[in-house]
Amino acid sequence: MSSPSSSARAQRTFLEYQYLFVFLAPLVFVIGVILAAPLPAAAGEGYWLEFWWLFPVFLLGATIVNTVGISGSALFVPFLIFLYPILAVRLSPETLTQPPLSPETIVKVGLISESFGLSSSALAFIQHGLVDRRLAVALVGGSIPFVVGGALLSFVIPEPVFQLLLGIALLAASVLLFKADLGHDEPGEADAGATGVEADGGAALPDDDAKPGSAGVETDDDGVVTRVDRGGSDYNYDRGGYLERFANYSIGGVFQGLAGFGIGELGIISMLRTSVPVRIAIGTNHIVVAMTAVLASLVHVFGGGLVGGHAIDLASTPWNMVIWTVPATVTGGQIAPYISSTLDTQILKQAVGVLFAIIATALFVMATGGLL
Image 1 (cartoon, rainbow, N blue to C red):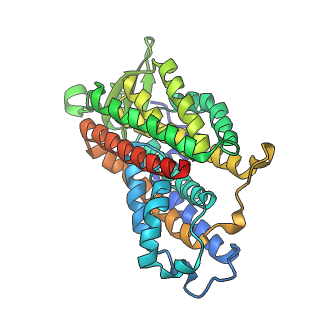
Image 2: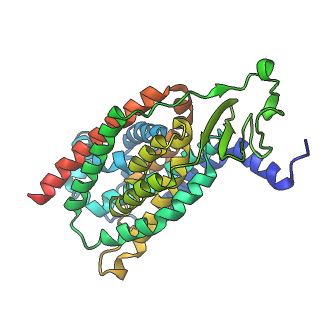
């Protein structure tokens, strides 16, 4: 076997110690916010500690959404609308003298938190060898115009209408998960004694010098992909079904632009239906959701003027909230791959279905309140 190149060694080192870079990013962010962020005039001595209780809440939420491979805002936005006002009265009584969070602020907190959490979890899934980067690039590229279009439409179309449509889409996805046959074979185990496989893949399984552990991937002449994750488990599948995935990710992309989530929820369905193994589908979906979330947030911040809408005012950001939510989502993103690798396919499928139904119900409530 030839020695790895310097770039491969650098990539391997980065993936081996990615958790250090991942946790340094929110630390730098929090320090920068505390030192330089503009604060409201009413900010007192306890300003930075006021929302400490958001850390465990967002840690749990980030772990859940990253384990099943969907957008963080799918949980964060409903939480900030329905549960945050109740908890804030009990745990942060100072908020009683402040106006409730506006929709723009809710989306802002969700996007900032989601961006860090998704980036953290995506790197962790890449490290574990559970991301099909070829699929991810194709899906992100095909989703871009729909995400941008949806984000621009959000400035001119009533928000309750989109909440209602997204709730219907998620409810349909939940029913599909429970009734459709989405079972896949569990990954094989790279057993050195039985197959002659050596460490890092050996000769019998693919190996990638740029990745730690028994991680590697190869595609044969018939398009069958053989992938080995860091733990030595192997997966076999093909990348067929691009048209079905394109349809789901296009619709999901529109909703991603409109509400900050949707592409992950609908996209994971098409991944599973086209026989992508569930753990590979979840890992790959993280890349798609992370990149489209960043794109959607940029359009929301800078694109309002293009269609005569509003732009998010960064000066109004509740910094005492995000300094707790960002570290929480990063930590949850690192925990998720370990949970994902220990749960079987059936449990993951049911968890996603239940989660979709809960989110859809919350969206129907939001939409009904906005339409009445």
